[in-house]
Length: 76
Length: 221
Image 1 (cartoon, each protein chain N blue to C red):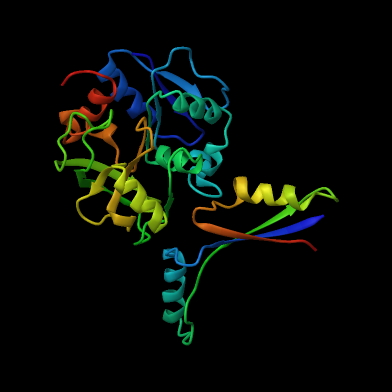
Image 2 (image 1 turned 180 degrees about the horizontal axis):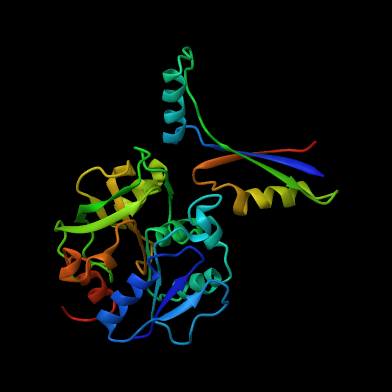
């Protein structure tokens, strides 16, 4: 079973990489981009029946650093 | 004095740290591979060196913080054994939740590699007792992810408790409140981005790091 995990910086946490991407987009002539925030996408192939609690623990214990990041788990 | 340096795949300041410890303690440290589950018996100082453990995969220090030896390091820290994490070692200690906050990509996105002035904020800790509060010292930095972040409440708390050991005298990497080094609540774990082990010999261009090891290893200057 494929599970998608999206790790994003918490609101208010400065994202220098997002800022650099934003500047690069502007440099390419793409106007009208108000803000860019970069995150991480992780695809897990887990055993069918893996519990929500286990997936949550994987995120909280390793995949995201909850000091600075939020995560969202997407089941198919 | 029995010291240990934890070595991860991708550590690259482990040798420098070992030289610093041997120079000051007079005895070579045990080099402990990350797969070990126990520290050598009777260890009374543990260092986590700089480098790029696990190639900085996922987040700097994230994989190393989950390696088997970290459980033993965490237990030792809980017993009051001094633990020093430098650069990647600091990142590992925050990822292992032995220190508050996180280290993010430098605000300017550049790798910063130069000697920077630090202000000693707390001269009462076991690591900083040989400095004077407010003293300025010069220590090299070499990092890409040294931008210290913690929420405002945590920052207020650690500042109020005197747990900011060092501050950058000039902005270096965007760190919250220019924090360069942080102590745990018991004061026996110090994480810092600057490299004191690279400033222990005149040939390094400065010796301001030497006193940190002298204080921490109980050697009088």
